[in-house]
Length: 281
Image: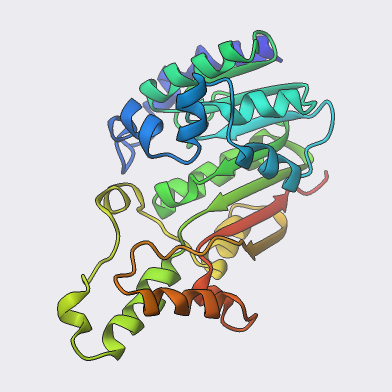
């Protein structure tokens, strides 16, 4: 498997020229971002890559990783998911990342876990993967969806479908949803006199404004995955309630109340999980 990845990667420079530059440049995702902002940074930074955050094992269990499966991680970042997948029984894990600074960190992670020959991180654009057809049992996309514009996401999902074996699985997570900002926050801001003056029109932090070019809703993510050709698409709300951007404590509590009820959960819960399969031949 490693030799197949190496052979395909040799052609990645030519492949990369066939797609336009990404909406968000790779330079935005620098070492500072991965060491001080990106989820799991505390555990990675304090351990030099040796102690991954629990979210990676939890995600792979939710994705129902099975022994001896081949895993592809799109937007692998620091590479923790690769090491965790192999330690949980994966036959081989390959991560794809276009940030060269992230790849340097990923190599440190793989070294800290003695992953030589069992996992690899390659430099590539997710719209044109330097990977063989039908080589993977599981493709993972953790918190990359919102970083790809709609066309980039479509091409990435089509590539994920291509590299999956028939019956292979896609597993994705995205946050935050568009709804919590553009619906819940906006209505709260407009509902109380004086709030439009005190509350910013856009509550997103600067990193989100730069990086999050395609925040999702449950219906939009479902539609995107289906349009790429996947079967058995299921998108569910997660558990994360994000309120740090809300200026007033009483308004923050509303998100908790909305999240607790099935009919209003989409207005309060800030993340989505998605699963789908490549149809058997």
